[in-house]
Image 1 (cartoon, each protein chain N blue to C red):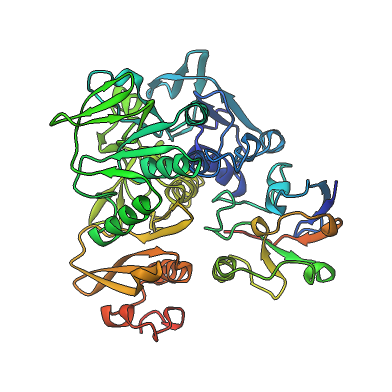
Image 2: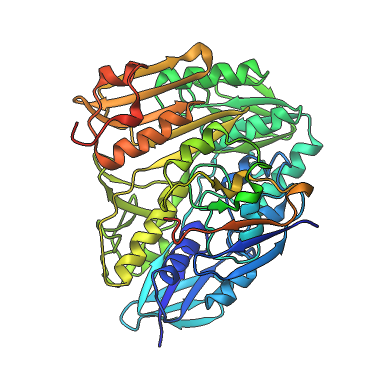
Length: 399
Length: 107
């Protein structure tokens, strides 16, 4: 009996296997990953792990005994080379595996810089890359970080905490521009500069030399080495070659089925309809990996339910706890709750008076309340959001 | 090394050595105990490592922090006075013998 084959052993792949077993799936499950390490957590790689606060043995998502106990055939260090849909076969470098249902959890890979000297640049996605970066930070005195998004800023913060000189180079006029509003970009710019990090905005890289990053216009930034976090590209080649529909990722329906109903796609690679986006979305987060894995498992078990979990995300930089709930794209109004100067505030995003998302800085209660409000579809007015005497926890759905 | 006894909602019990400094959640995950999930890996961002701490040990625990308090409001199983997130209980010598009971569901 063939069972389920899961391609990709990141968190989405692992959680798909786990969810199938939790939901009572009894047939074989094979989990195939091309990295040497059994499924592990990625978020700490740019945070606690990079800082040395967490050792490598904290990273695995499950103990080896878990896979044995739940009959999950973990096939690490194995690369899937092709899908044969008519034969329901997965080809790998080591052989072939039959499937009843296939789950693509192929993730994404780092976008690479294309400038002279780019071969000197390190990137962070895997544990091995984190180890390489950790080693480099320890041996260097001045580090350049290209890209002022989440990953770049987390690496910059870690390097700064370790006492290194750090320069962040961002192409856009503000930090984390794709994810947060200007007010939050400014807040984080200030936070990083206060800690002594140099941040250069609106700057494009022309060349990377042995000891510097040369910017367009001629300015040169001294750096022993360079790390870049300039976005990721979903891994769609396997799906595309197999004739599956591909857009901004592997295209799936609300049940996370690809254009072949026996094949699901989950996690970073899935271009999916998201009720919290105005249309389709592709999300790179633990929440999305875990919840989509469960959703696909329900479909495989024969009780499909649409994917409609509230997106949430977090980042830690210099001890600032920043959490996002919902998706703010398309908002036409923002409301501030709390005071920026207290470093404890939330930004509420509305579209035509309807709550879309909440970004919270050191206001965990707002974040948790936001997740609940968005899940229940509870009405919150912009006025209530800005009024600290209104207890967000006591608002009721339909109220 | 101090140990922790994890009791599943079915009554099945496992006693595990958990080194000082490691959190109670990790003791479970690293030993393949199913009743604790820990989707967020211990960042206090989900509430899937929820446990009921045996009454005898409650007074020894640190007070519930602000973030834990918020997340405890989102547990899948009923929140009780002895509910805790096991990622927020670092092991200490005086917690040797700690008993935690796991709820019937974490999500």
